[in-house]
Amino acid sequence: MRNTAGGTRAWGRVLCAALLLPALLAGCGADADKDADGGDGAGGRAAEHWRPEPGVDWQWQLSGRIDTSVDAPVYDIDGFDQDAKTVAALHGEGRKVICYLSTGAWEDFRPDAEEFPASVRGKSNGWDGEWWLDIRRTDVLEPLMETRIEMCAKKGFDAVEPDNMDGYLNDTGFPLTAEHQLRYNRLIADLAHRHGMAVGLKNDLPQIPELVGDFDFAVNEQCAQYEECDELTPFIDAGKAVLHAEYELPVADFCPDSRRLRLSSLLKEYELGAWRQTC
Image (cartoon, rainbow, N blue to C red):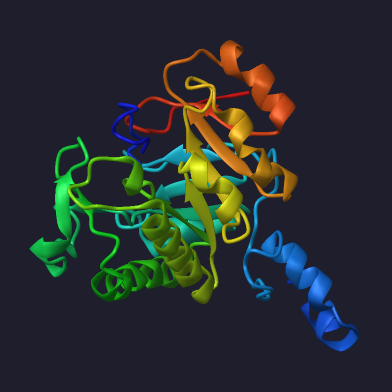
């Protein structure tokens, strides 16, 4: 979702993997590990997970029955609503699959909703059944989010798309700062990596320079409409995909810039069903 001030929301390589044995024997080494993490920001950690490259085509579907016939190598689908069978079917077609989760807002319609104490629930984020979370409370949220991310891993997902990752830019009911957001976003990235999955930075454009090393790709909504797409270039420069969606602009208005910037751009409807137009 974009921040509520913007007024919009989306409902919602392994570089050495194929060479793992040679890497162990011949030294894929520090340079490869650094490249797999896309820079120094991830602390030189070996990356045993997929990373999408700039310009990769993708499909984003968070509502309705998943249409597995869309010709795209990457699918982004809801982690709770979709099961391991759906993920396996997509893998059978050669696709990578991203697990959509809300990590910065409480949703009263999720099966684990009762596990979130009232003390960490803030103001509505403007959407039915959703309230901002107090991301300062990592003592409460870390085990809950790890359980969700582990669910994605057990279902076979390749990556996580954590949503509502820019609460500090919104009226959440909590005195959140940029530092709180950086700490929390890095925590979510570390949890995904701990469970062998890639992770995308959702929106949060102001913190891209500080977080590009911690995340494997970006997911953005409406950067063209709000004239923000140039701010995503650190991901492209690091060899990491930017999965981008617009809702209100015709493709002719944003695709030329998307191609110039090497963004993976779609035109979608707000409900994020199967329909899409690509650049």
